[in-house]
Image (cartoon, rainbow, N blue to C red; front, side):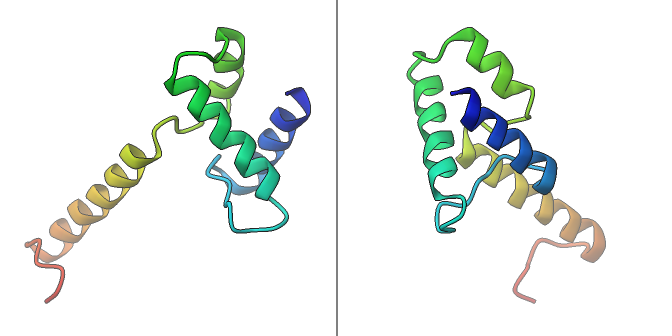
Length: 89
């Protein structure tokens, strides 16, 4: 666990986030591990110590919410700049 956690910390330091790509051969194993930690967290079977350590990396436990919020923030910026939300125009 500690080995993968240290790999995640290094990934975070290099990339500024913990969303490890699953389609990259170099990060595939780490991505699977992170995905499994999220599963354990969401099923409330991840230890509080592990949660605390992973929280120190600013891990996004719920990727769908993070993605939605990211796109919503982009839309708000677009509206501020353009005065409307019709992105197609």
